[in-house]
Image 1 (tube, rainbow, N blue to C red):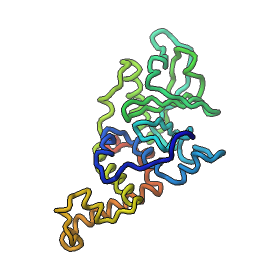
Image 2: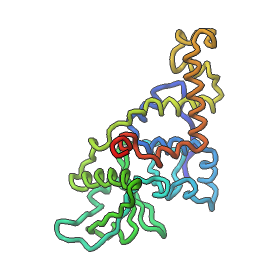
Image 3: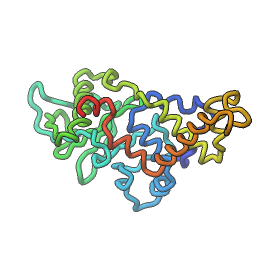
Image 4: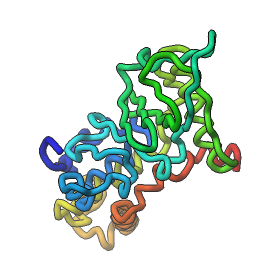
Length: 257
């Protein structure tokens, strides 16, 4: 594993986290995983397996979500779309080289694990039989039961839009409505690791004038908000980050639930 170890952004600087407003759920999962001491140790200690962290390959923890290309396993991320390849037929051919500026692949005994990513958003495609590397093919998609179908169908819609238009389907990647809170939780975690007190965190998040010198009595609501953020941050660090991958987005649960 090349590159320096993970170094947290300056939690006191709000702008250090601003890029995450455009991130998808898998990007937030990566931001939490790269903060894990267990992951950072395993990433540089052979023969550790990336599968125990939900990855097809180790990714450098020094790289932020905007710089990295984590390839999540399908048993962690139900949005992974599985497919097999067949000889191309006229009008049905897909050639991955048309998307090469967006793609990375990891190949192992389970098949080809493709990640198609752009601007903190990504699509995951597993080729479980055949290959995309030898030119145009016909794709046959494998989608499971009711629960698994919800995130996989969204991935299929995104993939088809991209494959047909050769443009990133931005309309199919709306901004996450809870990104602001997710960013605050991540920032609070970095603050706690850096040794900041809860009052220091409150001042940075809400302003010193609001918090005041005796915030336990004059600003109890802000104290409670910080306590909740700290509790949420600890839960995320203790494995809660997996919910970014294993739960379909709220808008999909509402539509089909």
